Length: 185
DNA sequence: CGTCTTTGACCTGCGC
DNA sequence: GCGCAGGTCAAAGACG
Image (cartoon, rainbow, N blue to C red; front, top):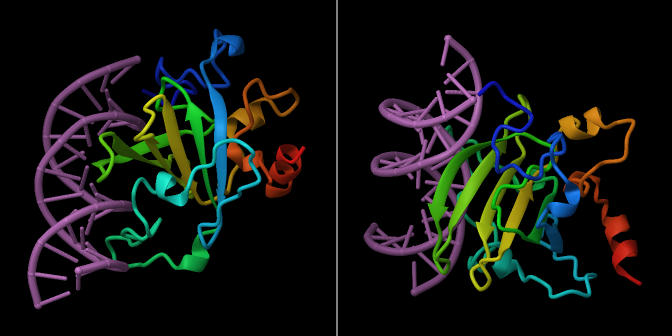
């Protein structure tokens, strides 16, 4: 496949898709969550809020699942730099946010008829993970959870370093302060 | 040929 | 201690 910038035709959210008309994208960020260490939820949004249960897809303990690696290296809680989860209304489960992701797992979760997909950033040295699943109660919405912070620039942002980003900015550019100020009218 | 997706198995944490 | 649920690994196949 050759690590194309837009590896799949359905990567409609690719910023490098020259034939893409942003106005045709069925995408909207309906909700976002800033998930810090304690799975804190930014409730500054006046929209319908997602509970942590929503994001964790029925797991009351949130990210209480297997936070380990096969080699026994347990991921310390403090190592989790940042978690971001947001809900988007989209027909596509995969939205190209400017980074290249490699799918490494798919799991059907309890309390949800829709499987959860696991992605890793395919950039070497970057261990950011992403989980994508459709909302149980409204399959039109896709819940995307990012785990960690990229240690590299988005290829998209680099490419358009001298231009306005065509698409909605990746979550990495959403600073909590910005979110707070932007959402509080 | 290189990379990605799929998928089943395995591992670990947590609740009972 | 056991079972369940979630997260990850890795081999095999698919694709460009």
